[in-house]
Amino acid sequence: MKLSLDSAEIERISAPLRAANAAFATRYPGERPDRQPVHTIYGGAHLFRADAAPRLGQLALQALEEHAPDAATLAEAFALEPRLAEKVRPRVLHKLRTEPVEDLRIDFEDGYGVRPDVEEDGHAGSCAREVARGHAEGLLPPFIGLRIKSLTEDTRKRALRTLDLFLTAMLEGTRGALPSGFVITLPKLQIPEHAAALADALDVLEPRLGLSCGALRFEIMIEQTQAVLDATGRVAVPALVDAARGRCVAAHLGTYDYTASSGVTAAHQHMGHPACEFAKHCMQASLGGTGVWLSDGATNVMPVGDRATVHAAWRLQASNVHHSLVGGFYQGWDLHPAQLVARFTAVYAFYLEALPAATARLSAFVGKAAQATLVGDVFDDAATGQGLLNFFLRGLGCGAIAEGEALATGLTLDELHSRSFLKILAGRRAGR
Image (cartoon, rainbow, N blue to C red; front, side):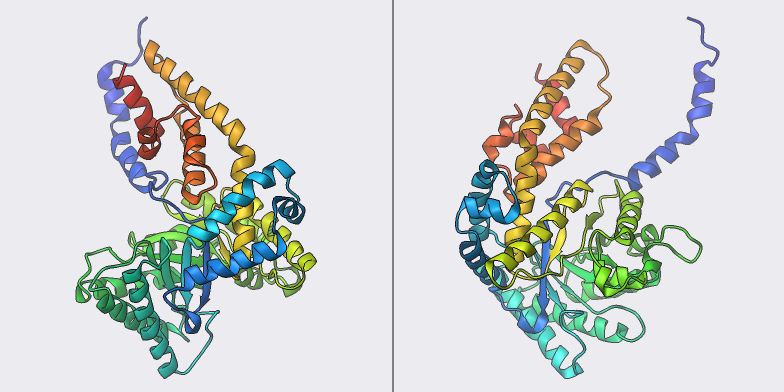
């Protein structure tokens, strides 16, 4: 068949795409290969101790045993099918015994309040030493960090002073070792300069504290309307991330501050409010593929009181968690140890309900892709395969899915651990 374009013309026309494609791949590298926690639980810095995670786990276990002592009661509490509850409860029980907290944030902001400088100085040092003790004794959760005050004019100096005191004392206690998953939370951003200032501070602190360049990472909290749309009407979130100069690893929605900044009255501030949905869609659309993790907010109704009251609060939180998961937000915030029961019950039910269909789909998908490579056809739907693989990786990471259940897809452990559907296909092709 005769072509109208010769090879030289095709090269001339498509040559500018090389740089554009390379730039796109740099900005949108895809999902990060490391594990994302399913939640962050926070508490005031004045309350933090090295054994905070196991203590929270014990309180969560007590709530589970008191208000859902068996699978039937759990099914009633969360409106689950009895068979699903029988699978979920032992896994939640195991989780609360072995890893009750995935991510913990020591809070010097809303959960701490405004205190005299000498008092916050003292807590910055004492919390840092407790983190160092927890690090030495193996008590820390997989992810941990601190939330400083905002860098708005009223609190910018206090925020940076607390950060300096905390990091200096912690690294003295750990002899220069950063705890795994350590992150700094920057709240109430309004302008890119807030993220840039924190990046500047970390640029100065790292060499002085003996850390490698880029070792300190932070996450931003989207709590103001100006953090979603700027003064020109453009989506503002990417500019906030860019200002962090590679240090921003996550963006978290602050449900109640954001709805308040949108003019929503307190009685109607909740995670499913349309204002929150808009903010999350902006975050998702502008940061998708960048590797920046996204997190939803918290349910502010606490599961405290008699069984009926606790069950109602659990159902509300579970509904919120399920809504987040369906919307592609795989992390959220918890405020109370009894909320850990609802968090893990909702997350585990989400994965276990979808497990049979996901297993069948991934198994068939791998077979279809392998057959395509075998006969020389092009398999062009690797994104769907990666999405199915990510389902199992997330479920395995939080304990919702057992290893044997993941292997029922026909994948090997090595293939699962590669975390890449394309690598799995390449490996199977090479093995033929």
